[in-house]
Length: 211
Image (cartoon, rainbow, N blue to C red; front, side, top):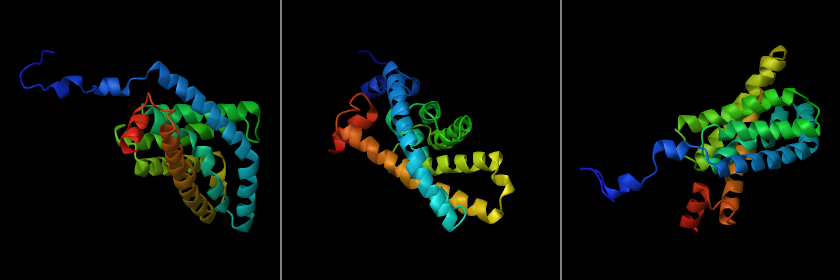
């Protein structure tokens, strides 16, 4: 392979930024699969998680946010696996659509929440220029999703509630997002990678290198 002066073989063979960020067919397929899978998780959590949500809210208004993180899972998980711009937003939106289509107690407002949560996670990966996908960034993405949820719920009606409620609720959403979306998403990504399910992704190659 010929190289121009001052250009090494490594520079030639290293993927370009455009190539690294370009969506492949396999990325789209996996995004769809993850969206459906996470949507089914949301459907299950709509009953179990919402019961816990109401119980905690009855104890102290706002504490119910501690149960919300599972609904943020799709965004961080999708981005940690696919590692392309828009992955967090797309997978969260797909999961929200599945949850809504099967039937839940929130109807079309599910899509508003999915957009805000996915966007919150997406912005974290954007801040790191889609180059960092470690556990710390995953946790931050979960927090970002929680912030997105707090913002959209404030717009949709929480503005009428007390400052104390909104502060408690917002903090609980961020804590829950960090643990049940960011940390759990990273654990699930690593488990899938070590099982060989992500061999066509950077996450799978990283898992083999650290095994």
